Image (cartoon, rainbow, N blue to C red; front, side, top):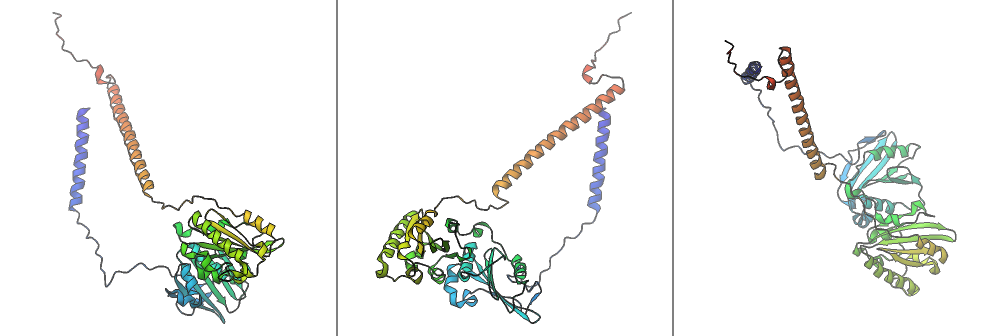
Length: 388
């Protein structure tokens, strides 16, 4: 058996040697050469607006814009507060019809939603486009991710909304914490809320431009405050709820006292009441703070309903799970350890099977020759034939 194993090993080594000689004798294939001309080509980003979509063809190639002032010079201060980083503009044609599109990009979803709520006027009907949309005659406004699109049709048809939905499909979607909506929106009570009246502000220009109730300097946006206003249809009359989110509860408590004193001053307040506050029933004005949020009710509702509306405003500290990279270090380490474990299992299994195969084959060979299964049973000793 040992001679046969040695012969088989010699044959295997001889075959391996022949294959190695053949491999060495084979001419090597030359390595491919990379020829570059000029500067290396950079990866091109997908344009924000397409050259064609839903039957519309761009009259000229869509123009990227980096200055928010070129997108809306009249409201450039508000756009900068919302974190506008630029955008793109394009004019499209389809037969005799025209379509002017302006896309604005922002640092995150909060800025895009704030700009959308800044441009959307109360009473505009809701449109199912992107994350949220609305329309006003020939004008269609919607937002998706960190992009706001303002489109003006020469003629609005029954398929205009579907065409805008086709345009929204190609817009980018941010990831990570840039995809989180403003947390302050969760503090708005949903009962009796008029859905198309919410306005989110991150600075004085956006707050005042969207019809803020309080003077912007009293809100103190310089303290990193954020504000949201919304209209409610209460039984006794319309009401406006203002929520102001401050970084800490201590700042909220201090500002609540100042806002309360300002409202109590009435006609003698400095600065003077803005029009939304001056048109409100002074008896229905009420303010409180919960956690880092200051809430104010204005409008024409009776004091009891104003108090009930404020009672539904509450702050709850919740931890938000941030989206993680799929290939995190923890995942990579666990995958490596699982690979090592699988390699050990496969190696042990192969060793057991190989031992069983070789040992079993040797045992069968010995049995076929009329010998014991194992050589242990072969006791060799010297005999002295002393019969004579």
